[in-house]
Length: 242
Image (cartoon, rainbow, N blue to C red):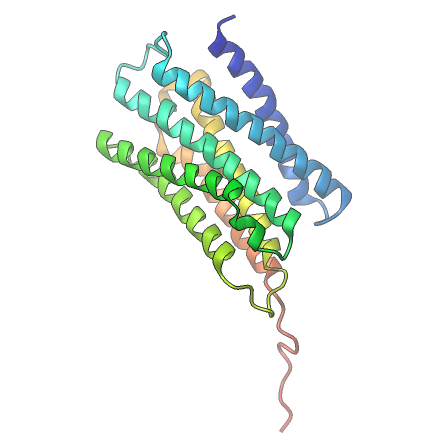
């Protein structure tokens, strides 16, 4: 078995753990034992899958063998299965790392300013910029779109990290936790489609409607949990008695 094929096998195993475990904390009681246990399993599974995706992307770009020779547009292949795969791997790791960090540090934002966390987010930003530029160059809007999603997400995280914490929103980190880990699911499912589609339905591999599915579902979940975790205003709905 060649190195690339071995990486694919391990990537599928790690990704399957993450893809299955991902839905348990969404459905389970928030903060409960099942939520924490399966949430960690999803994060570590996706971190492993993301690291392997980066390795496969580098092999696709610089390896000695030509991957999927049936695709004749090699520049587009390098974009989707090289640079975008590398970016999605980093984005998945970045989301998982940030989601775990927000729970670990809770209300404290200063620890998130450390170089250890900032370096991960910087790697995501740099890979997103290159992915977007490459996509624009080869004329593929999908690469530009997914790059924009990552850039906006990193900007939102930095705004949270560096903004002074208002006393009225001590639990704001919970919303950050949900958004980061749902974002992790979006990037992981998108990356999964980029690997799986070429084997299952190769004629649909460049169909942007299929690739947009995880983002549509994920954004819907982010909106839902943002509303759910929004602090309730005391006395809301109460009427003034004249």
